[in-house]
Length: 108
Image (cartoon, rainbow, N blue to C red; front, side, top):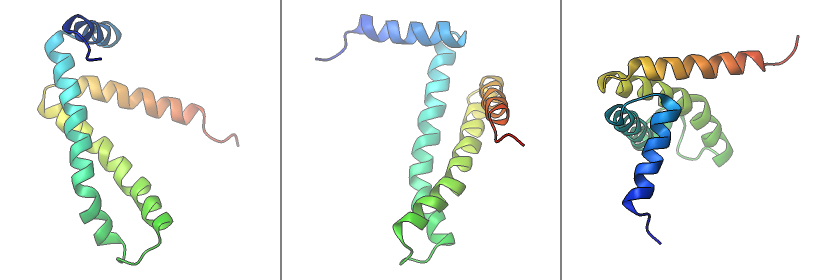
């Protein structure tokens, strides 16, 4: 069953409350996520083709994808966020994630 417009507004309203953004800024953030994801999908084959031979085993292709494309996605996300006027939003999220990852790293 399709979601009614009231339910769609509720989802946007929840995002507004969670992120502390205006309706237009929420749209810009969602657009940045969409553009970064779409660009990553479009770049996957050419980028992995530059790094790997065509007959490379699947597991090595996935490894290169994770090592190269995931950081590229983050850079694209920050870039699109900047172009859409949401640099501060994405920078704060990036800092939160890196802080969380560094706290939960391997114990020395």
